[in-house]
Image (cartoon, rainbow, N blue to C red):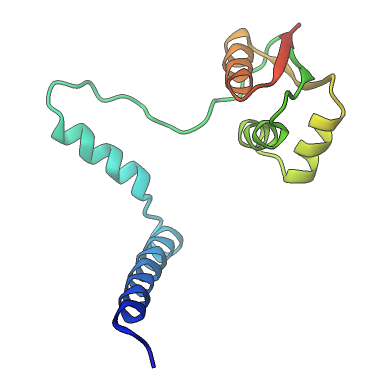
Length: 131
């Protein structure tokens, strides 16, 4: 027999599951992005703020710079996760890039893109060089 506390936890778990299901269905079926909706709500609520383009990610551009990973540091898992987000690659590829350091991880990128990605990876403990 379930105690009252178990029933409450079960009820909360069902509510959380229902919320995730609603978000999943709304994104897949109706192409509704809750993130953009929340940003647009805050832009309407806060007066006097100029609307900005809050797109996620960095537009890839061409240039003559290369980003070289010299060392992943002590927290390799975080560097791998950050590398996966920056480059949109799978886990084994990111792990092999980190394990084969020093290696070029980005090439033919602009100065700005190289600086942004270098700062993001250095924040999590990696050592990089821009050539």
